[in-house]
Image (cartoon, rainbow, N blue to C red):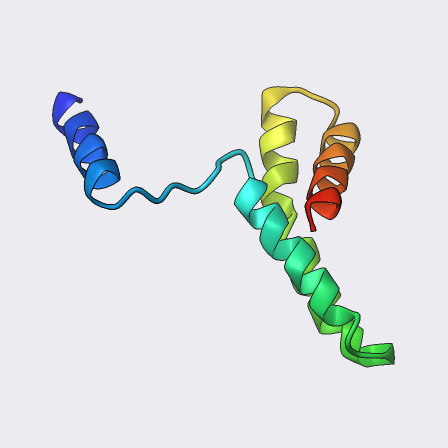
Length: 85
């Protein structure tokens, strides 16, 4: 609808902050949580790993829904995020 499009343009002009789509934000959060888990040892890492795994469900689901190889796509996305940090 035209009204929605105009509101999006207005929001971007007044507050120029955008988040990438396609599960990139969720993957970045998951990578940050995984890095934070390295500060703990043993069983203390498990809650961090579980939350990071849960965050990666969104990119996996998006990849599955568009028909690409889920394993290759998520692995490539992980590699790109790891190289960025």
